[in-house]
Image (cartoon, rainbow, N blue to C red; front, side, top):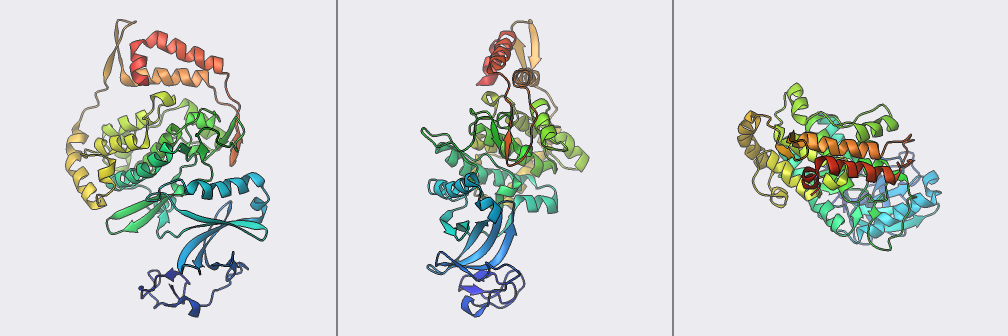
Length: 424
């Protein structure tokens, strides 16, 4: 490996100059490690990982760039903070990320290579990624173009559908855990941090107490906000839809000043349609995208878009693309943008005509949107939100299950065949 004498970044032997500062590269052994006030810098973990440079800091730990001396490659080394390392549950989740990684494909999920104990703390060894978190990109650019969003969600769908097929629910999807590796064709997405994963397979060991919520409140589905044990992969569908919404219009779909108000908004409100916010921002977002978002944010998971792959398909088709997410994942962003630009005039001209379905009991008609609203109202009333203290793990009081049964039963009585159709 080579290293930059200025910033310390590692590069393969065939590289000549540092991409960050243009310096000529030297063999890594000729570039001393700068201390930067961190005693770990320069140390070798587990007899093979030489810590070279600080990359990032988080609430759980610090991430370093390291040289794996056994195979001569750079890796990312995430080490827990000392106080976190004393939390047995945090350590177990940390180790589980390594264990889960071996069961996942890594085309669009970060590869966790090793787990080590080092003195009084613990370290995860991961593939090193060049690029930035989606959060960083959104802070700089506020919104993303439709073609870039479609490609990103197509990559997320490939990774998450595979994880869901293995009965793993990520449970903490947010822009901080979506990593964008820049290439000439566009972003290549990697999903980070499966430490909060929920294993839905039989005989899976449970680390979360019943009624406890894990995740980030802005991206939580209602069932996740309540800490329901029935939570499944459809909570990840909701979270990806929240990421899509934020990437398109620059704001989260459900806001609030603190954890409880955010979760109250999730449980009781519907977001402003993206097309409306787009008009205010001078963005062209067709009402076909409103329909996708509406179905992704159905509060009762049984009526929600059933998979991330299907969400990606509907999003792309909502922007006028032909094909499916498996195709769009390999299309350069510029080509997707060109196809969407060609389709947008017709989509923007489309009148907002809500679908109408028959109401067999009232002898009249109701819109699809009002039918879904009725379902969501019943779900809200049957499962009222409780006081919440939002931290990494949030205790939530759950509404009585009897109320849920009554609410859903009443809804079926009123809507009859309409409700049955919507729940499919």
